[in-house]
Image (cartoon, rainbow, N blue to C red; front, top):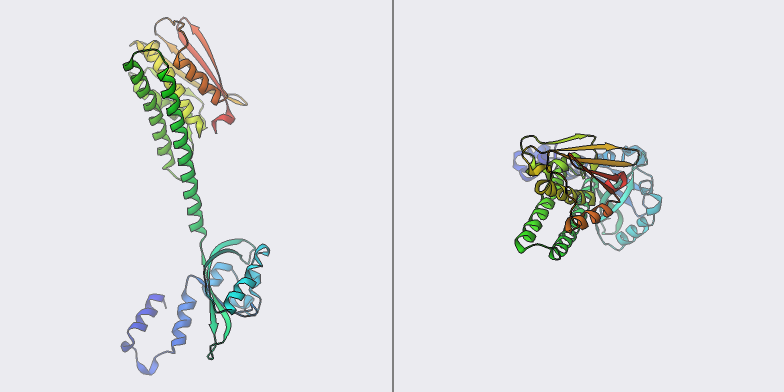
Length: 340
C-alpha cells in the first residue's frame, strides 16, 4: 500500500467497515515501512530495536543483520564521538534536527546523510530510546559543490576580464593616434574579448564538466568577421584550452587579424590567410601565414607589439616573425601546460 493510499484511508475512516478498522499502530507501521527515508529506533545503549525498508535500501543491511546490534556499525571510525553526543541530547529530552554527517554502508562505502533524532518515551513519559530518520543528501551536496565551483569560476573569469580590460585601456591611453583611432581600437579589442567569453559560456552550457573549448573553435570565432570568400583556411591538429589561455589567445589572435586586415593579406581582395596547428612533445605550434597581400613593411613597435609581448609572456610562449616576400609568417609556440 502506498503512502498516499494510507493517508486517504486515515482521512476518510467513514468509508471503512468499522468491524475491520485496523489498529492505528498498523497504519503507522505501514507508513514507516513504505518511507523512502531510513527510519531506525534504538535504546539508550545505542542498540538497534527496529529497522524499516528505507534503512535497508540506504545502508544495505536487512533487518535481521542489524536489530540487536549497536548502531555504531553504521558510524565511520572518525565519527564515533557523534553517538555519545546524540545520546546525551536525547537523554535530556532534546530533539536533534537536520544533523548532517556521514554513515557507512554494509559494503564499507560512505554516504552523506541528514539525521533527525527524536526521544522515544514509554507510557509513563520516561525516555527509553530514540528514533532516527536518515535521508540521503549526496545529490544535494554534489549540486551545492558544483554551484560553488561555478560561482568561483565565474568570479575568477570576471576578475581576469576586468584586469585585461583595464590593461587595454591603460596602454591605449598612452598610444599615439587621434581620439577616434584610440576608441576604435579599444572597441575592437573589447569586442574580441566578448566573443571569446561568449564561446566559453556556450561551451559551459553543455554540462558541468565541459569547462574547456578547442583552439580551432577560438580561431574561427576571432577570424569570423574577416572570413569572406573562403580566403581563410584553418587546418592541422586541435587541442583543448581553458582558463587564462582563452582570453590571452583571443587578444593575441585579434591583434594579428587586425594587422592583417589593415596592412597585410586581408587588406587585399585576393589576399589569403592560412593557419596551421601542430604539436610537438611539449609544445603546441600555431603557424600564421599571409599570402597575396602587400609587401611586408617593418613598423615601429606600438601598442600592438607591447600587447603581444605581454600576452606571449603570460602564456610562456614564443613568437617568431618571418618577413617573406609573399607575406608575413608568424609562428607561435606554446607549452601545453599553459593551455590548461
